[in-house]
Image (cartoon, rainbow, N blue to C red):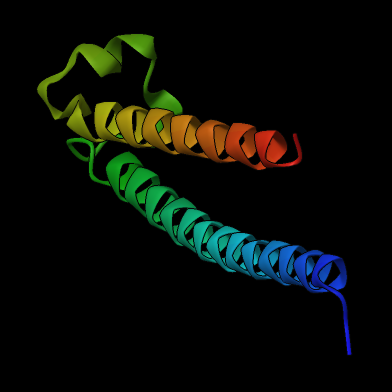
Length: 99
């Protein structure tokens, strides 16, 4: 029969293992969502480049962002910022769990 201390140690080890599994599953989900978002952003940027008033993307300059159809670029920037903040928060929380 095990002593109380051994049971507590095993219980804490099991709780830590469960938390690690949860963290891994969350990171897998976050990684797959990030990959899907990357694919969506690439497709959106390609569509914006080919549909910009019939002008080829090589002929556009920085002033084309002042046009009314620049909403896609702004949307891509906002989404990239949100994803960056989310990944940063997850990394900080993951690092602080070890303490």
